[in-house]
Every structure is written in structure tokens, then in C-alpha cells.
Image 1 (cartoon, rainbow, N blue to C red):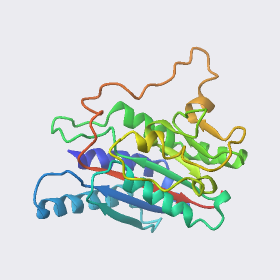
Image 2: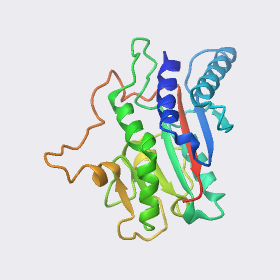
Image 3: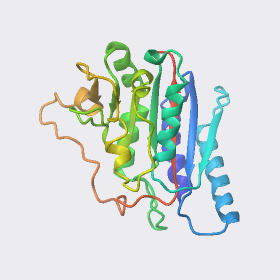
Image 4: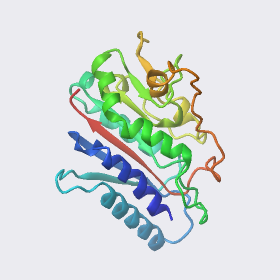
Length: 245
């Protein structure tokens, strides 16, 4: 069931000590296009909230999760609108970084699809759990605007939409729009910026950590994992706002 998959992903993030950072944690739960009456949908939302709270809770942290519910289906609009709005609130944007990740490529509503996909595990391990390496890159490279799994190199795009971005850069990005094109959110949001490009401003973890190794083969997140190309009826989008760097 989806609860176990979500719990596994967020438990891995907690085990990495991600939530020990000084942070704000925001979760947008998308329940658009789910068949059923309002009681069923409200029950689903409550289960999602409880699952996420249980997976991330640690009595030593006393952090709170800010939940919002999106009843409309515009793919990643609600999550990206959240990260965009939080970046606007950064008072020292050059020292503020925000992490965006989600539960896509994990569950598509099929009852027999009971394991997290290889793609989701790879993205979560590389971009979420390895947060110490990523934050170090923002410290070392003040030009760095976005860092994710694999970058577009010529554009600030981060493929698969698991990424960290500097608040200063996100403040130059246009407000996300509601689009019927699901790929707009991956290929257009981060690139919709008024900021001039700077040297070494965009990287992927794969490029920084692995591409120099002998016999390196670029990891793939495009395998057929039982229907991951279908956008899940239910999913969450998480934003972690971290300051300072």
C-alpha cells in the first residue's frame, strides 16, 4: 500500500539526519482526480498526514510539519508554488537553500505495485539523504544556483525534479503556472528565471561525485518500474527550507 512506500521514503530521509537541520518542513498533499466521495478523500488525507508525521517524528527534534492539501490536479503546481512562495520570504536569500522532492515514481494506484521503484530510491538517496555533501557544495561555490540528481547543464533545469536551490535564485524565477503539460513543471519552472547565467552555477550530484570515475555509466531513472510513467492519483510534494549556509 502507498502508506508503506511513503513511510519508507521519509524514514530513509530521517535516518540520514536530514531533519536535524535547522529547517521548516512543508508538505503539500495532492488528492486530485481521486474517485470517491468527500468522506473517502478526507480519510485518505488523514492517513497521509499520519503516515508522514509518523515517518519523520523524532522527539529530540520537536519540528512541526506544515501541511497543505491540493484538491486540484495540476501535477506539481501546488508543490512548486509552495517552494516559490517560501523563497520569496527569505530575508537573506543568498544564505537560504530549499530542497524540493516528492513521491512520484513510487506509486501509481495499482494494488500490486507494492515496492518503491528503483528510480525513487536512487533519487532519494542521491539528492535527499546525501544532503551534507550538497550543502557543502553551496558553501564552497557561491555561484551555485541549483543542484539535483542530474542537471540540464545549459539550463538550470534539474531532471526528475528532486533538487536543492538557493533562495536568491528562486526569487528570480517566475511564479509557476497551472499547465496541462506535466513536463512543464520539470523542464520549464527552474529555467524561467531573469537571472543571468554564472560560471559553475548548475550541477548534478552525478556529475560532481561520479563522472570522473573510470568506467562510469550515468545512472538511469527511466526504467519501466510497473507504470511509473503514469502520474499518481495520490502524491505528496515536500519542501525543506534550510538556513543558514
